Amino acid sequence: RIDDAYATQVVLGAALGLIGAFFAFLFAVFHAHIMDLVGDLGLLDNSQAITRALLGGFVIVGLGLLMPQTLFWGEFEFQTLSNLGP
Image (cartoon, rainbow, N blue to C red):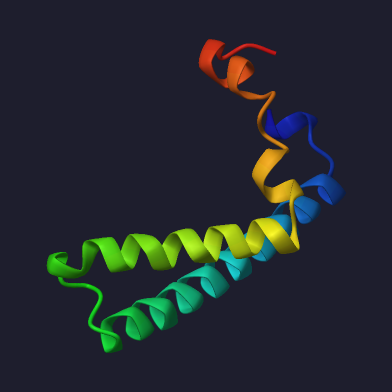
């Protein structure tokens, strides 16, 4: 309840919300640039689906080679997510 919240908690929540909004903005800008790049390469046409999938696979593998944790940190969380439990 809002009656039980301190002013510092509300300000901290607002600050975290602004930080989250900033990262959402960065993601939107990054996504727009990637879509422009993919469009310029002519990969948005469904006849290029295999090429687009291969490019995506190379990107995912490249990220996995640079940061292996991004591929495997969630492997033990599937049971928790599927059961919606702790």
